[in-house]
Image (tube, rainbow, N blue to C red; front, side, top):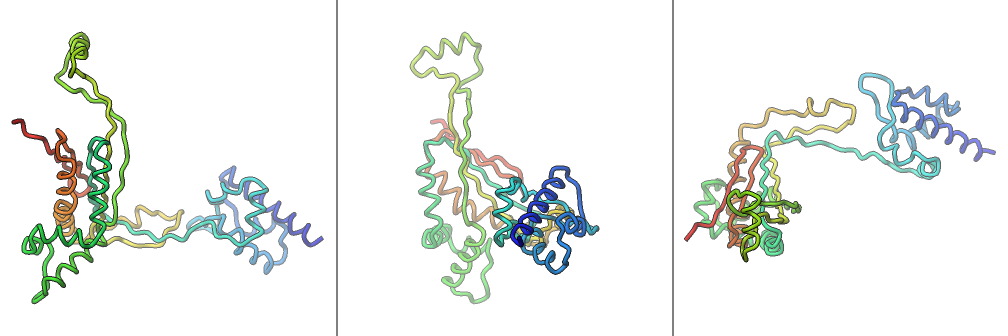
Length: 292
């Protein structure tokens, strides 16, 4: 009998939440308690905190709640019943970090280079490879972008630089896009057809491009606890820090000696290599093979 009452209340809770979720209507905690027939506050508070509180979101400035989007996982009685019979936390507690300045670099190159490119970039996940790049660039040159401490030994200095790099350069992503390109000067349809009949007369070329993307946040972030009903973007839009510009310049330089050189060297032979830079600065860098 007790089990039947409990199941009945769970069904009432399910139908109440489903109704408010479907209609996008707010409700109070007391309305939910009444609808589910939990008359004892102590019993209701236990079930509320254990099962239902994670399915609702407080409406800022009121005593009301709305049903969270997380409820979409439990819009059938079977899935809801399974959830309320065990203790689960369906909404993660997030903290936010908002950076006012970001550097975004995107390399565009033919897909045929992807394998070589991954090999070259993966090597830079290792400390000895980073150390070699720094030394090849020249320690004195590195010091113009990353200041050394007074009387700091070279080994200690390079270790400190590596520690900074390890926090900034943590990975990359590769995506594939399909494109079509014109391989010669603009032609009429007749001229293009005539050119296509020759051995090397391709006019339109279909090509899959690999885009290698790097994202680097700069400066100190504004931090807060994330609440889905809060004015998130307004509250976390900081003014930035004075040293952000210097850090962005430092990241750009290290990105060149660590990544750009490796990428250009490994895909050497392509007619053009494009690097799109955006965020702090918006630039398009093009490496083009010189005509002999």
